[in-house]
Amino acid sequence: MTLIRWKPVHDVTAWHPISDWANEFDRMFDRLHGGVVDNSGATSFMPAVDIVENANDFNIRVELPGVKKEDVKITVQNNVLTIRGEKKQEAEKEGDNYHRVERSYGSFQRSFTLSNTLKADKIEASYDNGVLSISLPKVEESKPKEIEVKVK
Image (cartoon, rainbow, N blue to C red):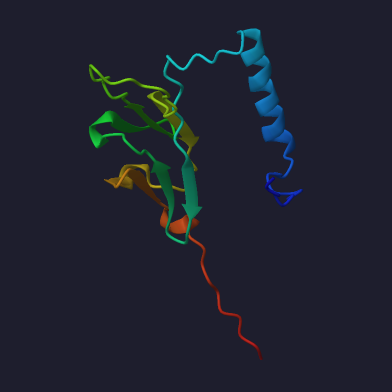
């Protein structure tokens, strides 16, 4: 007989009210469908976005892994910056057996309302290694000005 050391907190994870609720919600729907999860359809794709402000501009970085730059379009209309595109699913090859497809595919669109303190005609974008970077320069009067205080 082999003895195995008991580890009471070995596989314990922290409780999180939102994700635990969402997981329970998923399990409930799985039970309604006989415990079978339909992975045949493409799930929606929503890229993650970081927005950073510095003294001269705002920078938006969008994670777009697997998306070609030709499949991304950026527009500015009525002070709304819109990023839209599509992450296309790879064609299934004959003879391959897919056991699980978890990557997300599909069209996406993210929109951001711009401040009037930005130069909409000077917006620049670049795309490198699956990250779209958009620079939104501020107008001169919106930049913070430093005033020296003189002590007498």
